Image 1: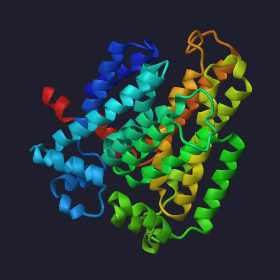
Image 2: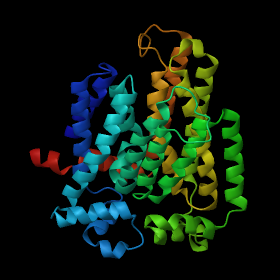
Image 3: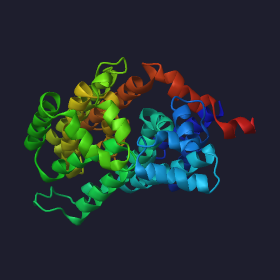
Length: 372
């Protein structure tokens, strides 16, 4: 109950006070408490094993995440203290990015809580990699126009470094490098590249080639398992995540296309053009989902937060969440709301993840339970 009260009071207030540093900091601290002290969720047993018996996870845990575990163990931290350290890194990187990039950071934080935060609480390793990616992607938005040189700008190099760091936490993060194409090429090229890449993955590229490429990050055992024929034929191969990917892509692309067509009503059009191409290019994960593993859907999930930031940045401040507003802006606000509700439903409420991911967030918290 106390979690619900704080969620409504802190995060819900963001719809009224859209940019308040005090409210934002309090909300960030609240999210850190949830990340750190929530227990009994879906992946807790896996991460408890990774932390207490890391030797069992040799060749299955990326080097940088293993290093973080080693440091915390040498400091004598227990599992929840380790979670507190990783949560502090994650929420700091995400929080700084949202505050810096968004015109309405308190609203974005609420949307983040409703759509993918619960998964971040559960999936510690990917959440950490995702936070590094989210922080790094700001460098692709620093230039106001598309940078079409064959050489990388200093901002693009910073992004590349960030993605490589993220890949040493979760190997799949390396795929985010393809978003550089969105920065350097037009929409037509993005569409053609995505189609050709998916065809190559589904019909031509061998698992051994992909495995050899991914081995350098420290989790070759897990990656090889995902690419094996045994995994392809196992009961773990489901395509439920494909619905989430397609729903998000269709809505995001429609919203971006509408804004670009009616750009006289909106702001920050260059940002919309860039996120439009990113939403197209990230669909290369469809090939991986169909051929290998549905787990790569998370690569698109990390873009949800960036979409919230950029899509809402396009709405003028004097029109955002106002009773009286122009029709194109009203349409976009409702499309964003549909996107948020749809993603929340598909991620959590429509499956058993509600009981293993979402419910523990509200009922299982060591700190809050000790106060009652």
